[in-house]
Length: 239
Length: 239
Image (cartoon, each protein chain N blue to C red):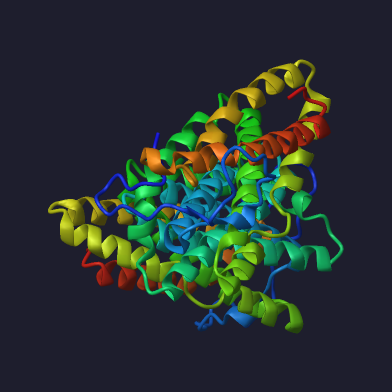
């Protein structure tokens, strides 16, 4: 899956690596080495937040109590605010947000579908895992954007409001329902691969010349997985 | 349907009428004559906004274009903000919002279901008609709340952001799809009754002694219907 490239004609530029050391030398990957193109970066990040909003709204609709609805709707509000603020950054760059987001819709929609799960608890864990990994990832990747934009984007993606709510809901559900933990542990594990594909697509080149960019950021993905494991651990789930 | 009274034990107090003139005298109904109990008023209003949020989120998920998603998600954000601000007013009064909202859930959920329609266009018109009538209605009813609260609640419900978006979406859809106008005109007409039941429930007494309160506000409902007709006219639909 080459996600960063457009499916509808216009082909967004790919993130570039700054001049790098010889390939044989082992280097710690620094996110500031990566220079994402602002427009497709914002388009993909904005569309992903829209996806989180839609998933969280679905979670609100299916919530079993008013208290769950309140927390989850606040979380949906966070994703919605991020979506609209990222769209505003695109307008600030004088581009039409819709046209920029459309190429990212098919793969993001597929991620949403493949992580929606079979019931409300799996939906919640699906959003927890994907937003946990991708919000962190895009926030780090934003370090390579032009200074002013970089600060604003990291501000937009900063702060909690989603992970805490989902952690609390899932924790309560796991405590209340014997057997749920085992099922969710399996489910959480199955989501990681699809989520990493989306993360990778924001870096991967569509031709062989740039393919090493993907290879060189492997340690970053290792780190994303380690944080995923910490999130699962917090829920008492084996990642 | 006695909606104002609780279905789960605790029975909220009913709105009271200020001392009134003799029943035989014809009087223009003034909303400031009506004194809703703040707690159930806020609970019902907050839950109704949650219902609008859920319906608008469903409309976002089903939207056929990114542009529609942007407008509708902003509208969903308006309902969500109102919901959380009304909840904050309940906390300000030292009551637990969940307990106050729960009695209003069954009838409001039924309204949401009965106005969701058979497809995306009917869903949009369903929200347009119900939020058009009920936001206006609760805003007027808020005039009878204690001064500070009254001002804040009317501020929360004031301003646009929902009706304009739905009007624009429906207008474009009607222009693009021959035959849709006729179907939506019928649909819009069928929603009014259910919506008025909810409005009426915020006033109606549960015993015969107070039943005249409902009778005396008939002119208000006539006005709500007149505004509904104007909204339908704006879409080129016969109300």
